[in-house]
Length: 127
Image (cartoon, rainbow, N blue to C red; front, side):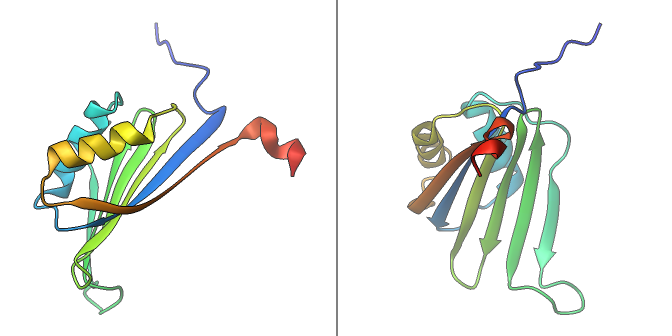
């Protein structure tokens, strides 16, 4: 019998962290970050390298790691020496724990800015 958490999806919690430094292995980083903040990676990460063969985009990589709770992403730009870590989840998470996990997983990456939000499907009446 399949059991699913029917509470998931009621609200979405997001946090974006601007980071400086270079992650040597973004896939490893995202999978380990998910586990450190109590979430479950699901399947392989999607990796894209830029610029595209036809020259579009900046210089860097985008990595998206699906999770059973939603996804993690890292959008890195080598020309500026950093990027953006995105945590998007229907399961609440402590954004301070994310920063601690970032520091513990990679000593060469530093959070320099952050933003967070939480929205819900039942909040639509308030718009």
